[in-house]
Image (cartoon, rainbow, N blue to C red; front, side, top):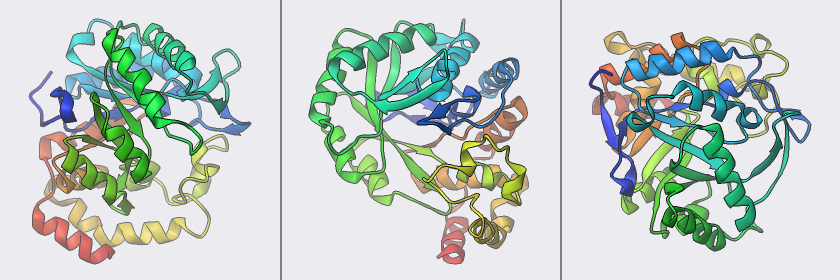
Amino acid sequence: MQTTMTRTLGRSGLIVSALGLGTWGIGGEWTYNGLHDGWGEVDDAESTRAVYKALEMGVNFFDTADVYGCGRSERVLGQALTGHRHEVVIATKFANRFDEETKTAGGRDVTPVYIKRAVDASLIRLQTDYIDLYQLHGLESEESADEIVATLEDLVSVGKIRFYGLSDDNIEHAQTFAQGQHCTAIQHHLNIFGGNDEILSLCEEQNLASICRTPLAMGLLTGKYQSPEQLATNDVRLHAPWWDYFKEGKMQEWLQKIEQVRAILTTDGRTLAQGSLAWILARSSRSIPIPGFKSAVQVEDNAGTLLLGPLSEPQMREISQLLS
């Protein structure tokens, strides 16, 4: 594993590569409440090669969720990391019910009994006896954050998890979780088009890691896509209501914004994706982008960001002015 740019994972003190990898994409096909929630077909062998490439390039932080592929993402990641467990930091998530056999998911459960059952199942799939970062996969208004945090503290005390966090863009939810003794990270939306500045500020104030999802705007910032028709019909990006990067009528607006800043993002030999990730690295010393992947080639591009480092302050100011 080569020497690489690192960050501290919040209060945990764990040292991780400044860029991690998200594994939603390698979960393959699955549905949530009857709708496609995967990124199309995947090849587990290629996913494994991609994880090996990440390790080779110095990436040691991997983010997954039990529901990604209804268990498949965790299983593939766990198998790929065999023999490397003590070299890496693994983050996963819980709260969604799913069936591994039918690859269908739907509904939530955050009761203490369910959480304890979910962590045991994740430990088996990941082939490990502890999880470094266990994250609540969103918090619904009717759910008790205090009860969930208490359950997570119990899991810390018995050694099944080392630290915990929250994946959510609600600042009040994040503030509640931040009060937990072993809370070390908040995962939230952030890319050059926008993000949750309130949560980023909270992370800086409370010594928490800012784990940044959607760092490449679900792939739009790779420069690969010019039309929604390029996506497979079973690709979640065509159906999910959480973003409009690939929606008819909106996609062209986003593409125009990319052209406004492309020259800056691609300075010093960076690809568009590397420049977009370098923007996040420059945004805060707490920020850790977790771009997704489905191939070793994509991992090589993403991880290459670490070799070139963050954008400069003048570049950040210019991008801000152009996109404001």
